Image 1 (spheres, rainbow, N blue to C red):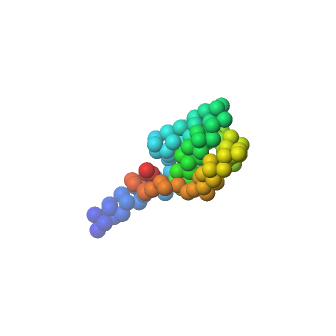
Image 2: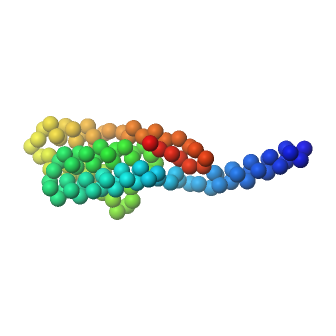
Image 3: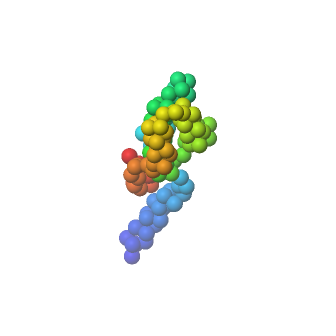
Length: 120
């Protein structure tokens, strides 16, 4: 009986930190993707290059399903789409790719592991 009570107490104590976590912490890889997409946006706007903005849009789409949103100071999807469409004005092929990327969902796989969510 002592063993059962001891095991039950240990399980309850170890489960408390798991229940206390509200949001998954972003992995270093996800943070690198968010920062890289922001750098591509800045460079694409500076050069008025729709291809760089499209690359940023596709990279940002991979963050959609992770539950980890970029910080408030990062460019939102709507203003990114506006900048990409403006840079690709008159180029129907690029506008089609931008529209495809606008509806694209992330292909990230996430799973829980030891109280954290790991995504790749």
